[in-house]
Image (cartoon, rainbow, N blue to C red; front, side, top):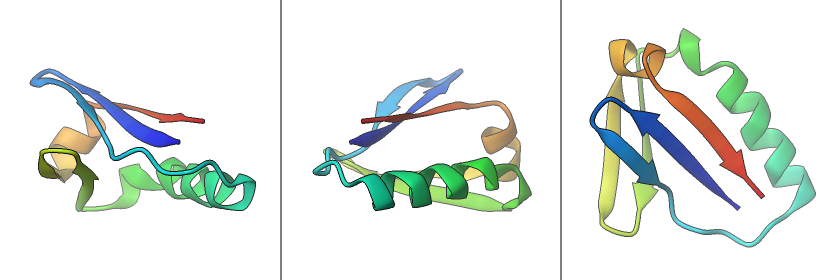
Length: 65
């Protein structure tokens, strides 16, 4: 499973992790609350991606199984 972020700067894919139902549900609940955060980051195969509050509001986040 991984997080995919579609932004106006491009599409960014998080690091692939082994699927686990509990973790999938927990990450999904976390992503539902993302708009309340002032910043957010996640790992990709090329490094860390950082989002400001404004960027979070303008991004489509997908949690892929």
